[in-house]
Image (cartoon, rainbow, N blue to C red; front, side, top):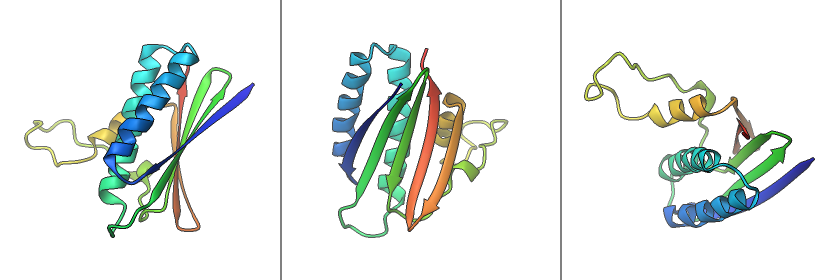
Length: 138
C-alpha cells in the first residue's frame, strides 16, 4: 500500500521548523521509530537549509515542496525547488583523512544524507530541482 503526504514551505528557516514538527507528528501517528523520525528531520533540515541558503539569487519568496511517500517498508522523500542548479548526487565526498580544522566548509551534510539513505537521486526538469531519497522503515 502506498500513502503520501505533501508539505509546502516558503524559503525561510522558520517555515522549516514548522514543517519539521508536522512531519514528526505524522511519523509518530504512523508508529515510526524515533530513529526514523531523527533521520528524516536531519535529512530534510540539511536539504532545505542548503536550498534556502544557497539556491536563490534574489530576495523573492520561493516555494519548496516536500512529498513523503510510504511504500511497504520504505519511505521516500521528494524535495522540489526552483533554485539554481545543484546536483547533490555529484557532490564530492569530503576528505576525512584531514584534521577537522583543516577540512573545507561544506559537504559533510551531503555525505551524511548519502550515508543515511538507500539512494539519492537528482533531476533538473523545467528549471526545477528534484531531489529524492529513500530510507528503510524498521
